[in-house]
Image 1 (cartoon, rainbow, N blue to C red):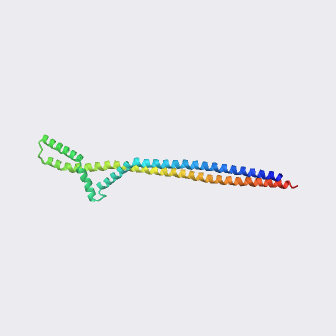
Image 2 (image 1 turned 120 degrees about the vertical axis):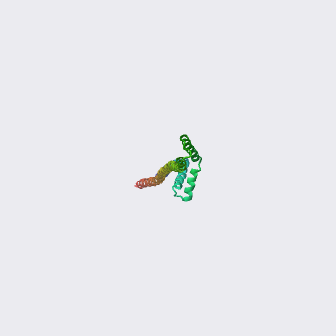
Image 3 (image 1 turned 60 degrees about the vertical axis):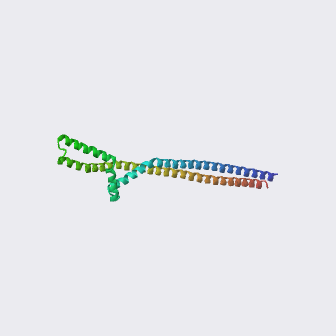
Length: 215
């Protein structure tokens, strides 16, 4: 009877130890899974937000890149043909032709009012006005393009900073996932160790009780 009671006690103790260890493992798995799911959702959102930032900034980056190319062309950095094409683009523009016509008309009207319409000074002024206007408009075009280039540069820098921030955030989230996995492994190991320790203690107690019953 004593031996049977001891065996029954051992069985109940072992069953309880197994149930306790199983509950600990289940809880550890649930906690780890919840942490990993949360981290993955945050990572996906970080990537989505970065993609949106890139999409929003793309027109500005593209405009800046195109403006920089036109500046290089005007400076002759892209070759003589590109430089000539850039200058021709200005001289053939409606803007240049409008200013040219208005300026030449103003010169003629002033000369007519003063009686020097056919004088040498008037002809010299007319011949000088076009190249001076073209030079002025080339400089103005370069300056205007510089504003677009700077805007594109700032947009590109903003995308780069957003990328770095996103990478840092994702790195932290991945570390959290790793910590959750490591914590789960430790909890699993602890549960198993506690389980076997409990069974060992019960076996020792029963052994002691059984040895004591011999005397």
